[in-house]
Image (tube, rainbow, N blue to C red; front, side, top):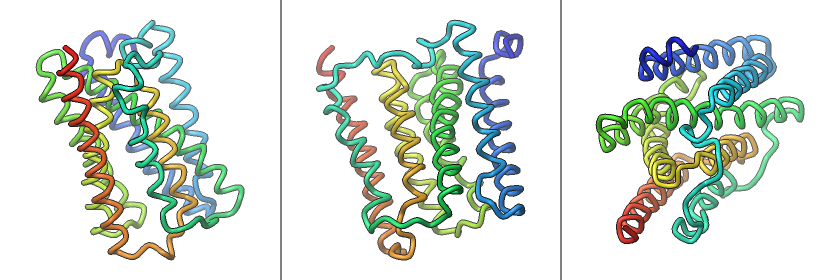
Length: 240
């Protein structure tokens, strides 16, 4: 891994994106065939999470990739209250046990790992590889790539309209997380928020979710994410 990384950080990031997408997509498909949600995906996500985390630590790259203390002042970031608002959306229409307890546990563990993996790969590897040349371009590409990556949800049975909405608000959230990481120099708030949002989706009352409600939730996520990101940009520039 180190040889590939030293040779070209961007290729290293793209390789990890490809590996992550393929492994998770195939694992989800096999899990569905077996009939137990995330039974194959969860252990593979744990292995990938451990591999990346240990590799980063072994090479002393924790600070570069934000696996350290968040360096921004909490009040500058509104004490992260907007992140709590983002997390709340999956619980707006009630709580429901959609899977068995065993499958729910597997789902939550896998989603916490996904929060770590996607943040480190997209916000860490990809963004850091690109921002050396052009920070603004890196922010845009990292955000859009993260959003478009959710198109793979079509393979797991998600509807076209639902997937389009996911791409839109994932892009907005990706923009916010990139801003948080770039100015706060820490990735943990993004990792935790991302993991919790994904995890709580298994408890969402899906029967109460109509298309209209999904649109409302999606618009809310976009507005809060973009609005919060713009607030941070303005606040940080004012303090300089």
